[in-house]
Image 1: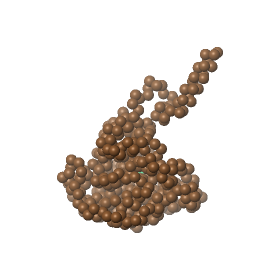
Image 2: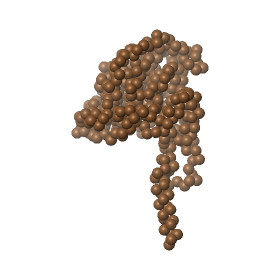
Image 3: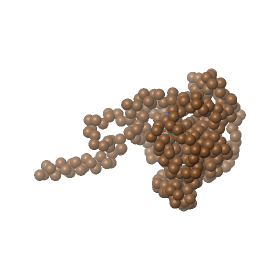
Length: 396
Ligand SMILES: C[S@@+](CC[C@H](N)C(=O)[O-])C[C@H]1O[C@@H](n2cnc3c(N)ncnc32)[C@H](O)[C@@H]1O
């Protein structure tokens, strides 16, 4: 009898101890022998330690700590909702980081407008635009954040009388590519990898889009995207007059519909660094996804090239990821600029986003001196990102 009681006690202790363990060690009903020796989160961290310590140098230890700590969210305000959500969130201490900016103009931009690309392919010259000192930012997009160092969590949004939710929770830095895309009245816009739809909801807040094409190759994720749209956007704006939703392979888009769109968002699949070091589920560093991970830069390049072809001459393309990886960020952009010219005769310039980083420097930490594009790097005081973005303009 005593033995039975002791065993029960022991089992209860093990159960309690398990609930205190990090998520990766809490695999449901699995015996220790079947747990992977190196869980994907450890493999991801090993990989990042090896590559990012070289790439980011002295910055890596602080970025690493932030990546492994609780992330910060932003509440993208749904301006279609009838509830007084803005006032409510402001009363809780949040501020709209988009309107509450440093209005002081960017002091001086270096006059250099044509630069070489860093790395081995330095023979490819990249034309950089002369930066607009004052960025045009849609006054309709609002994203609320708690102050620096405050990691209060947002409550889930509630539906209003029309069943529309008041805000969409996301990494506040992922609104930046949407702001920088600079949607103007009547623009025809393509979001090539759109699911689950956070950025699409942000783009629609501008209320300026003439026609929006949303695409994602995954059928299940496209269904999620449709659900998200119905939870945030009034149904009269979700008709075939304004919107098309498809589940095609985005790499083939340029062959079907080229020279068409004023603005193209290419928010590609990537190693999703924060997820990869925190969650074992659906982790691209798991052993059975090695091939998929190795193919990512090629897929990203093909998607960006398709987006470039889909844009019209004069149109603008935003490439974005949520990884710190140089190979998935700057290298992809460099190669795309080169191949667009070689294979399709398309000449591109890189749009200087320094006015944007200057404007939002109170809210985000940006990587210093990036040669191509801009990147929000995680920081304990403002734990957003990583988000990389690079904007291209078609000159021909
Ligand atoms: C980073 S997520 C996009 C997130 C989305 N933009 C948002 O803001 O919610 C990348 C998406 O690319 C999609 N994807 C992967 N390969 C693709 C392809 N060949 N064509 C189109 N979409 C693809 C994935 O299904 C995934 O939903």
